[in-house]
Amino acid sequence: MTVHFVGAGPGAADLITLRAAALVGAADVVLYPGTYLDAAVLSHARDDARLVDTQHLDLDTMVAEMVAATRDGLDVVRLTSGDPSLYSAVAEQSRRLDAAGVAWDVTPGVPAYAAAAALAGRELTVPLVAQSVVLTRTQARSTAMPEGESLAAYAATGATLVLHLAITRTRELMAEVEEFYGSDCPVVVVHRASQPDELLLRGTVADIADLVEEAGLRQAAVILVGRALARDGGESYLYDAARERTTP
Image (cartoon, rainbow, N blue to C red):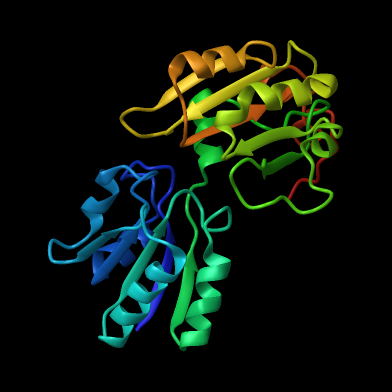
């Protein structure tokens, strides 16, 4: 029996992959993060599947559920919000599964930042403006950031910033990046992209904190910062009409 870590995407039931839907539909036990996932995603599960909301469980309790199920001969899906490669705790869960001798695999999903950019109708990399995207978070009541991974260090590059797990510190973070991006730099905040209560806020480094506080956002939001969000800039050499092309 196998534990399948499955990216559930940003929340909408139709924004998971075909493979993810098939795995959820075949699973005997489905663990899911109720804080971040729209319940509609669970419509892919069988009526007789056991559903376990993990939002109030610690890591060891979650892993114990998975190990016990596999030892009972059951297939398990552990849904993660977005894509499992970002802030999913797959590393520590899989280490424990290895120690218990339980097989596991990973199925990717649509990441939250991609859903946020799609809702905003923005490309995060615009020629001559920004060709890099930094996916990061900040520290508050959370695990310490590694030495050298400061927000100021990333902001100094001018790359498009994607800030996860940071919505409660928006005002403080905008004050930190203003030196590098300017007070008029575009900022987009997306809360629960693709879900029924999704919310899109457009502003600038100067005023986005006011908008976030007025909306009462406390979790499940992504902050995008950068000049690329304005859509101004150059054009791609790849598609330049003047570029020499070989005719097949």
